[in-house]
Image 1 (spheres, helix red, strand yellow):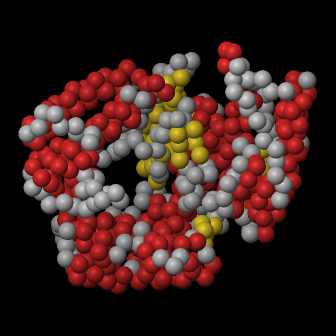
Image 2: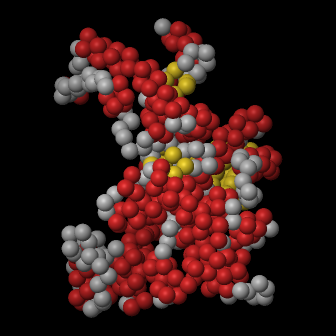
Image 3: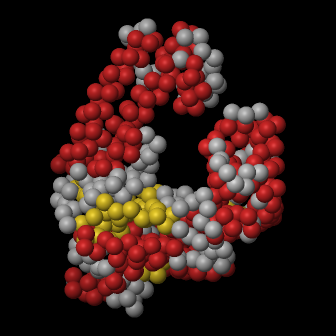
Length: 524
């Protein structure tokens, strides 16, 4: 039986479908069985069609075939935790569910064809399954002792901050993790102005409120530090060492293709996508992600990929010119808006241009801009008007995108991924406005996700063909992290750069910065 299974599963001419092919491949690999000839992952194909619906087999059979599949009833465990299920009952249920796989697959394939989504699935999403599978099985080496030492130091800092906060509050019994108690200190004891309320009506102590209050008193500033460090300790310093596989000393995260509506990948168990970079303690976590002996890590990071996508989609000549010339696009924007063609440029002007460059992509209006910059509303309006005078095609792109989204009910990415926007038809003005902002950003963020996936597939293939000792380990935001033998780092870096920068023809160049080192921290 095992020999027959090995032959059938490994035969690329025998088509196979499944509800989660990456999970299936992991299970089979653990049994030393191959999996070749896969043609459609039902969960993933369904997600491409409609992210909002259920993607499990029962839901798909009901929605696409009008069939109600039987479920396996699991009785309470008996002695020793064993579960007894009659063989005939289990067989009937499993056969019925297995028999539904190909009819559901045919229905999904037909819809993908009808909606012109099959090429996207075949070119991008399906090949990525193998890439993510290999990345998950490879894992990344972790120096657990270093993380534990960081955690111990963080614990000491947290205790010091706690004592300082209790002294500032004048209340030795204050529970710093209690929102109501903290609110009482802020708004009654210290008499600071409230910054808003929670949905339940309580005074808010959210981070944005504390940031506004921080210049007024040391307590909110120190509380922000306390919360940030406490989260780092519990989420990373204490948790990551427990996630290390004792068999290989590596952490094996799980990547999810069917998660974000824009198509961006996410990860869990543990989540390696949200390791903070804004604080020194957050960046230090990356020191614990290390290369094994005789290897080095390579970090390959797309430079301003979303702004480059916006330049491509809008066709704006001024934005394209800045990228083509290799200019600092935020400085170029500031010089054009403020009429400073040459000479020194104040850092504050560049910082303002950076806020508006990124804010425009997220549909930022004058109100949000005035809050972020700390300027009057009228000045923010003038700033946005000046921006659109410089980048007139960006204004046209935004208007055109929102109009098309209203008409079609979705926006599309560079490779054709459709992002549905049902709230554009909402009776709520607030929901419609949010959907319009999302309509502006979704094709930009979604196209950047397309390019990253395409780059991952290309890098994976070229490494297998030309540098089999190197391998992809992580994808985080706009960065790929790899490991390679120290002697091959230079050659592998150039292979990676070529594949990432050449993954798709844009009107502006895609640029990748590459760093290498003994740890993930060192590559930056």
